[in-house]
Image (cartoon, rainbow, N blue to C red; front, top):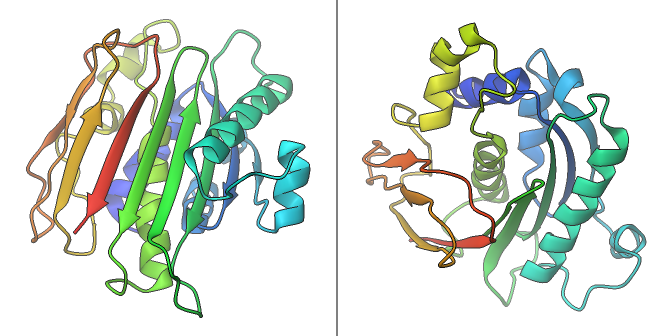
Length: 238
């Protein structure tokens, strides 16, 4: 298993009633290993598909994307994953999550464009979309994959509600730690993270996450409530 904070998040994911379907292409492959290596995955992960080739992606989306690594494509992936989760769920009435990922990371041949990835998660009432641009030449492919995997696992943590939690669960140390992220140290490869959040006027969620060059946690993620309209986050690693 990898870093302790990742295991804490994965345990929180598996203790949640939410069941998920993941469609990942071009990165975040380590996240699948982390999710599957902790007991409880069979109760949480309904399906994980890697539509890596153009043909596979085209068949999954029932069309050829204008651009494979794009916001539109990742939103369509998360929607398809969400609808698939609804069909596969073994817990009628419980929440499901669709996760979409598409990336253009470091490869054998140098890329002309940015090293970037898009991540989208979709529930019954909210859409999250993140675009991350990575500095070229700063990391290996494995390191870029790890960064994308870390964000994916973090994004899968759903804030608990009393509707689905037992009384004893509300006092769970791991759950509270995972939901608040107040004491979790993140590993961004010694990189300063600047976070800018664009929230629709209808939204009421506030978040601030900052880490210094020593990888020390200096910010906090706080959930103030759910939102009805989509909001998007844009990250740049420098």
